[in-house]
Image (cartoon, rainbow, N blue to C red):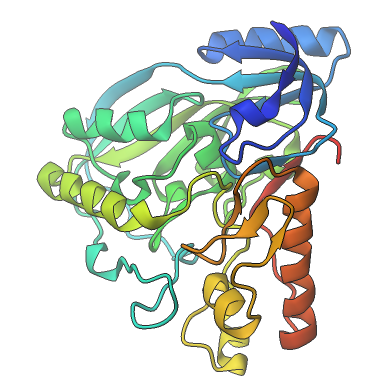
Length: 333
């Protein structure tokens, strides 16, 4: 355990003040020990994974920050096909390949595997999603190919119910093992996860994800590998030193009302709000995708918030839209 660790070193944005205490948990057992110890001492505890999708305040995070960075993958028994394709939650990425500066699309990569045999896979929450995806491909297991080039851990993926095209990771989750507010370990089913568009129960429950049980597929591995590679290639234009998309797609009703060709906020920022290149300090609207705010030097959380707030204000004043953030704020600002 270390003291006064700059959290900018542990986020994809490279922004963030110091953690009072910092510890790296290499599996779910170490995570449980750290959480229970902190609770017994009355020390607040915050969990991070790959450090994507978060903005840490310039004043840092009080108490203990645990970086959940490892764990095990266990492949269980095969099962017969079950169920049908679930109701779509909504695509995270929306782009029109003929407009704007952001020109990749993914519709031609989409397919479902719901007639394939299933396989149970249990994974510690600190396993990087990319490691799990490639390990599954090597083991002849599919169902995670839509999340290629998404940084972060399995726990973070469940926390935000990440999207890849029309797919959400919640589609293939059977259950979760967690630590509750009292430090007790419990298991809950997928039906109790409260998963929606970029949200789950964990946004408000105070629970910590320990382990995830997936219900994946014995699908076409060659096709899955091709989709993984193609997703990665098309998304390679995504800007680095960012926290991912800043805002959720706008509602279809607003898209129709404004006569926009896409619900992508990147298009809105570029063509309607005219904020290409807008910058506060070293935080700027990305040239590659206008729904990303990037750290172009030594940006602070205050710089990032300044850019975000300008976009929010102009969207409200010019379009009557209340943009919804996808970025989790953490610590003191």
